[in-house]
Length: 277
Image 1 (cartoon, rainbow, N blue to C red):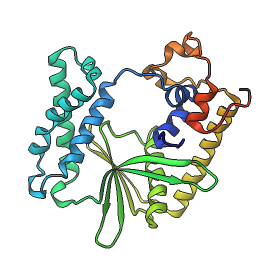
Image 2: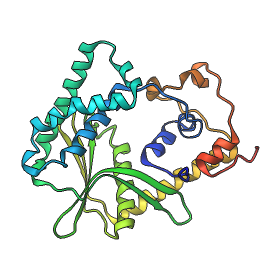
Image 3: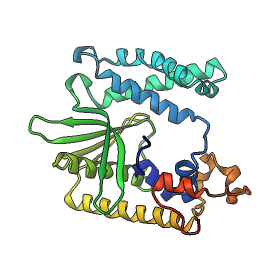
């Protein structure tokens, strides 16, 4: 059975970046070419998840790095389209070397031999009362002997400049803190983001006010999404990030023609039917 409509941190971020991009991803489900950066992130995440299957003493940087290429071959078997990322074997080797560097950086931030996660790649869902269903995957959940909860997220990119960045990362982590608090009846004590490109770290100790604020923001974003769905109009929002968008050929900002909206697809994706349908 298809899952009911829900909001995740990434989809909320898509809508805030550009409602039309959100529509093409969530409603129209237009295919996008694989991204080398996103695929590397998926690959490194899978290695770090599987690392904790090993006995503690065997969780070494060498063991983790040795798992990278086999994990990549498995990804290629599941999705042969990923082979398009590296037509040149030399570029593929360089890309894998970059992945091994990210794994080495992880070991400068934590000692996995001293950790026993309570959850890895944990799927979570929470129905907000009179609001959206929240959904996501938490990279890692640690629980201390006294019951204190830590949420850890791996970022394969570089540490954002606090003057211009961090908004997206802080939204994501507070989103998960709200979900985990409601599901486990205890507020996480620490939210930790580890940036594996440069070894940066961002730590957040959420307060009750933080979680009240994030719930308000989530409800506000969902209200904007449902209003756009009811109106049948997902507007463009041009920014510097447009250069990385896969949908320029169907975007009026770049001379493309916006695709006709399918009311049935809107209802399937968001549980809302356009009033003009």
